[in-house]
Image 1 (cartoon, one colour):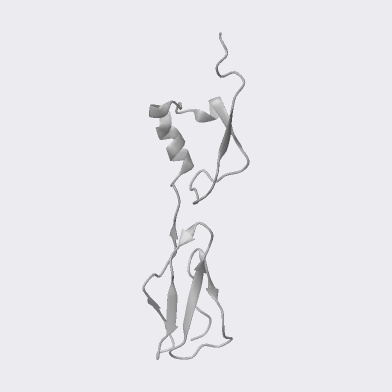
Image 2 (cartoon, rainbow, N blue to C red):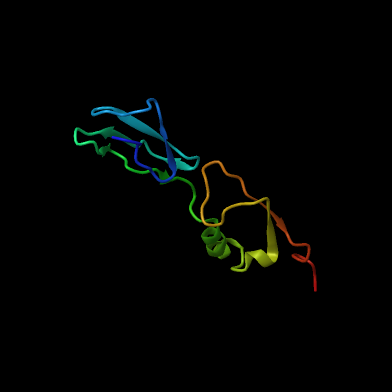
Length: 112
């Protein structure tokens, strides 16, 4: 079959140097992704996936969308003007177990 097919957000668990018909390769999903992709080398020399063919993002969704939609709970739509994020975080996605910390700007809460 040759090298196992690439699966986005996963790496194959390589147990052999060559694969022949009937042999199976499993994939390990990257951190923050879930799934159990596996493929079997078919009699035609092509990889055939069984079940999941991909790893799916798990988490709370987009942090940016959450912050912009949180104005109902007190945040403004311009959250960057009122607070800063501590550390580096991906605003387009979040991961299970990820902790995000914010620091309010000193001007917030001051009387004018």
